[in-house]
Length: 146
Image (cartoon, rainbow, N blue to C red; front, side, top):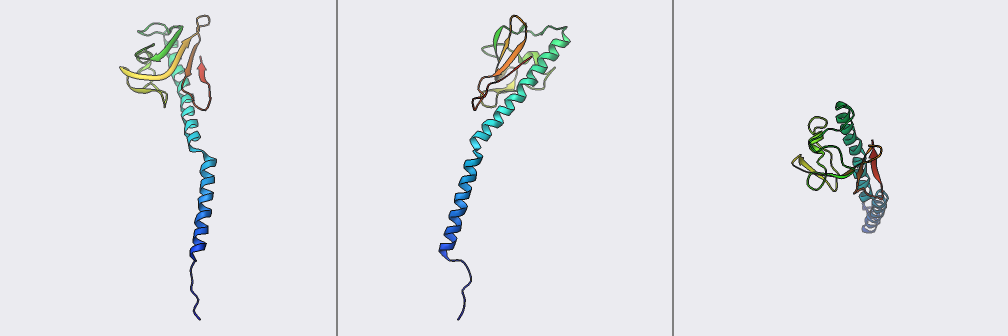
């Protein structure tokens, strides 16, 4: 009598079903949407100190006063070129090669056409500058003060 070697159809279907269940569990556990949102938040966290460091460099070079064609950072402003305070011309290219922008709400092509998606505010009493990422995800409050 000859023996047939190989797997039966039932055995193959069971293995495929097990692989599908395990793959589904791994995808749910990793939650790619949350991972991407977390990565964008990390990018926002790295942008804020970079912009504030450039502001600090400008301030240090100008004897403690932030110097820009736009004047002193207003008490409340938005770091955009169209509706708010134009911070790009003050920082690019002397202090930064390009202006960082919010990965989901901002854009930058040049100082003539950009929107960082970040808000910059100067405290009227202390003069401290706060930069905030308004479109932070996962309920995070992302801001940095200098």
